Length: 163
Image 1 (cartoon, rainbow, N blue to C red):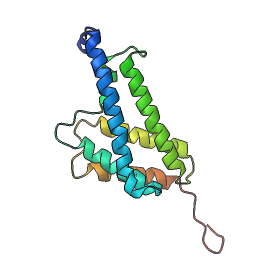
Image 2: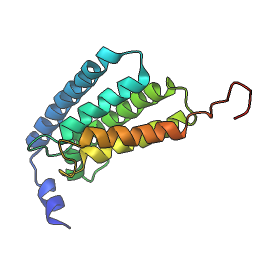
Image 3: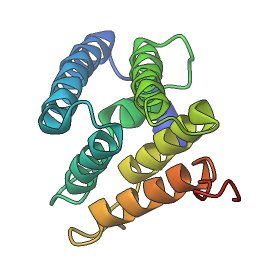
Image 4: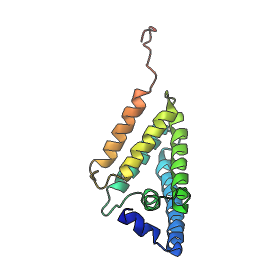
C-alpha cells in the first residue's frame, strides 16, 4: 500500500466529516461564481463559455493554487462510496450537465460529445499543477474550446447553394 493511501485511511472520521462539509460549501461557492461570471453575457452561449473559461483560467493561475478541491479530496480516498467521492461525482455531473445545456444552445453537431470534451479541458486545467501561466491560461482554454466548437459547426452554404 502506498504511503498516501495508508495515511488517508488513518484520518479520523471527524476530519473526514469536516472536509466533506467544507467541500459542500466550496461546491456551492463555485456554482455561485459560475453564475456570476455568465450573468453579463447570459443568452449568448459562446460568450458564456468564453467567460467561464476566462474565469477558470484566472482561477488556476493564481498564486498558491492547489487544484480542484473535489478532485484533490476524492484522490485521498479509494472507496467509491466515500462521501468525498460522492461530492466529486455530483460536482462533475453538475458541470457536465451545465456544459451540455450550454453547448446544445450553440446548435452544433455532437453537442453532448463537445460538452464532455470541454468538461475534460476544464478538469485538465484544474489539475494543471501551475503549468498554465497568468498570461496564457484563459487564452489557451478559450482557443481549445473554439477549436472544439468550430470543428462541429455545420458547413455553411454559399448563396448559390454550393458548399
